[in-house]
Amino acid sequence: MCAKKLSRRKFLRGSALSAAGLLVAACGQSQTAAPAPTESKSAEATAPAAAVPAKQGKLRVQTEIGGEDHELYMKEVYPKFTEKTGFEVEVEVVPWGDDLITKLQTMGAAGTLADVATDISPWSRTFVDAGMCLDVTEALKTYNFPYEDLKAGSPIQEAYTVDGKVYGMNLEVACVACIIVPELFKKAGLPEPTKDWTIQDLKELAKKLTIREGDKVVQWGVGTDPGSGWYREAFLETADAPLVKPDNITPQANHPDAVALMQMYQDMRFKDNTMPTSADRQLLQGAGDSWMTGVYEGKVAVHFGCCGAQRNLDKFGKVEYKFAHLPKFKRGGSALAGTGYFVYSQTKYPTEATQLMFHLCSPETQKIDAEVLGWWPSLKSVRESFFAGVKANPGNYDTMNDIILNARLAPSSLVAGKALELQQIDAQRMSQVWEEGKPVQEVLDQIQKEFEAAIARKS
Image (cartoon, rainbow, N blue to C red; front, top):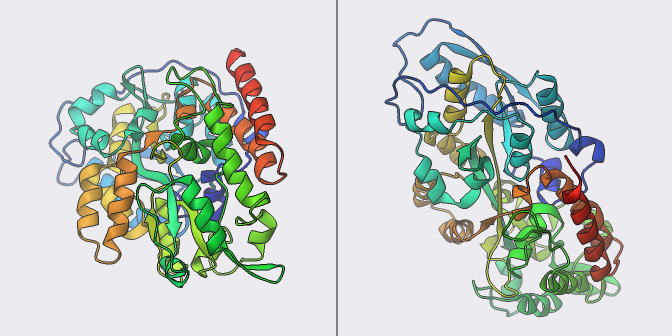
């Protein structure tokens, strides 16, 4: 999910999202169910195809998979669907970020959305609440999609499921973790983090791993802050203080443990000076992507990133890296996000569009994504079989798989009709903590008030 472009990576860190981009009102439409095909034998979750199917029509897909990745899909993924069904696939690549969400919501409200569209887990519930997504619950029973395998892989599919009904399908999973540079720990004579290390361990290690030459920092102990939105929710899991209570409606943004944890991270930047500011990070720019350059160049000992970062780490990294668990505050944990697809509720071809959605999230497609694009499959069997064949850094995959299996879905994504608004509020306010050094308690109190007001407002 997050090994693609800088704009996408910024989203994953919960960077500020524009109001115009995220809060375009989508008119509610009825949520209809996908007609189930009469027969299915394919493990890839598509109905049986004739040997040489006649041309049947054209389906539109809107996706954020662009560039070289898009070319691969055009050569390997979409043609297979056309061969089996006779339906051509017309693909529109929508830029990642505000433009993607704005376009999906606007076209969904106008009745012009593509037959199949990208579904992003933190915002999936919002699409469902707007009536944009087709109910594919019954179709699942007939298409033979390995749904139990998907649920065994992680809780990510919960984002696409409302009141027991399935409105989308996950393709790949992302999870926040630490990325460490072992060489820097070795040079400092320090042990690498273990699964049970704590936030206090991180604070002390960061002091020892930050190196200064006069007034200039030439090596940072910690590469970046916890950000906001679902990314920050990964850190809140370690404090057992999610943004929203288990009822998925009551906010607790200023939970005492959340305040204490965020204060510790803020202190690393403004008190300990072991974490770079945005301006400091600009000085580290180089190959690939400025947010990760410190890791690529071996100038950051501990960084926070998601599993998909491995793609650019392998491509641009000049030093060995490893994944590690987030440091505990009260417990271990992280938060999940991911991308997938949903079928538009107003499609003229509900059966075929549902087939295409399953095809795009099938074991075969997930295998291609893992092997070529560096994505992490959401299907447990595909992920583990892929890991088994990895020869370089196999321990990295074992560690990340353990993090994924024990992570939880970001709670804010489950707040009916309000997920986008809550995440936007969090992004705007948390920038005051990380960039301005504003008191954590004050900011979280303000977030709490704004969350309460947002949830109380009628959609």
